[in-house]
Amino acid sequence: MKSGLLSVLGSRGFVGSLVVCGLFILMSGCGQKELKLQGTPEEGGKLLTQMLEAWKDGKSLADYAKSSEPPIVVADEDWAAGATLKSFQMGTPMQYGGLWRIPVKVVVAHPDRGERERDFAYGVTLQPKISIIRADDSEF
Image (cartoon, rainbow, N blue to C red; front, top):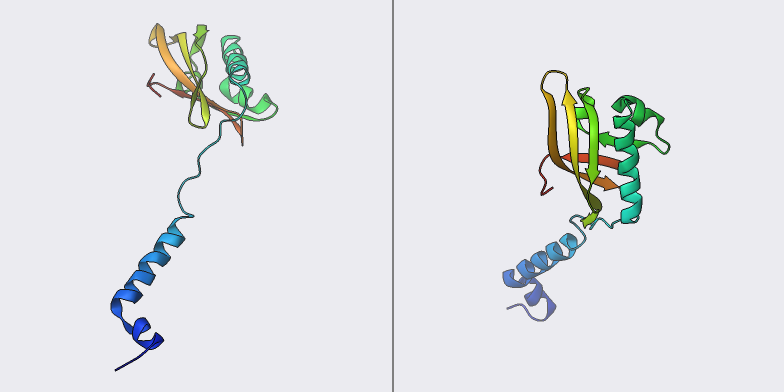
């Protein structure tokens, strides 16, 4: 019969408990970090306005992305496809996780599909990189 510390360490229940506790300790540091919202709604709105004005003025998406200082990552499939922005009306920026969600009503003209009015939401991040990403889903 084992006594003292050896009998405790030899028991399967105790060892199993140590393994489970160790896994919980290791996993407590894992997972996604919460994205902290950077900047103000005004800053997010200003960046989106500048982007939409550049598109409306006829600048290409590639030229806008290259000439932006600091660099801005932009994703808008209509602009990338060569559509023309005729007009836009922005809504109020709202916090959405780690970005500003800004609803926009646009009138876009495609050479092969004509002119259409659509509602989008753009996600604007200000850190660590500036990005403006369009979502067709107004719920974002």
